[in-house]
Image (cartoon, rainbow, N blue to C red; front, side, top):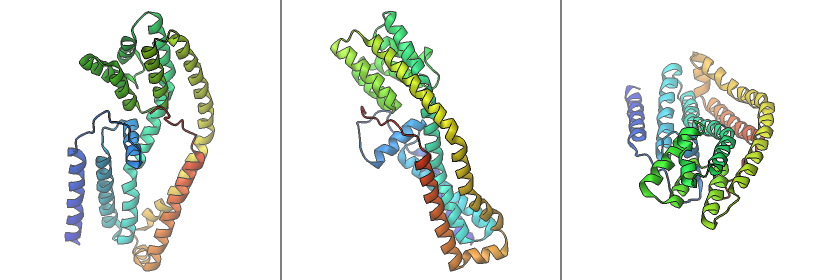
Length: 286
């Protein structure tokens, strides 16, 4: 048992070190497709400063840590493995929740960004200057992205490439529309950029009002479903230190029950998220 716990501790330390020392991916990459690209976009939206391999390393490290704690408390390999799987999925779930929360904050801030751009264009500022001033005058949640745009433009002097990096850094469909409108206005000499941005601001505010009503109506249903999924596993954690529970869980029948229960819980949770999810606007201009 001591050698086994030592092996788990060593693997956990290796995973943590791997997650820490992996270099952060560059802020801008060419457009990619596939699950790996979606994971990169998720991490970019969450703004956690991790790469895909770092996230996987964190998941493995948390799984090992939770499994060791569960094994030390309950002395049941089956229960420890079940909680290790649940714990290993928690970093990914946290990243998804953070990405959703940051996206909601950015969605709430975009009408103010568009209004600031309209004011800057009316005042006669050039488009690069109008975007750069958002690093200090724009909403706080979007200031870091526009600060990086301003620094990139000052260093390179290439407006189109800086716009591309800004779009990939934000990874947001509303940002795609704003950036492409600015790009077209600069390249073809559009004179009605202010009117276009004002119309976009009105559409964004109407969409935010509708989504706010839907979120408030679905919040209590989603939270109740999450509690229903978590309740059996909380009960298992409370009962796992008892000798009778250990003997039952380590039997073949107990392992089958935990496997089926875990699969049903995961399926029900994913189905609940899919049913209760609001339709997200795709990045058609990515």
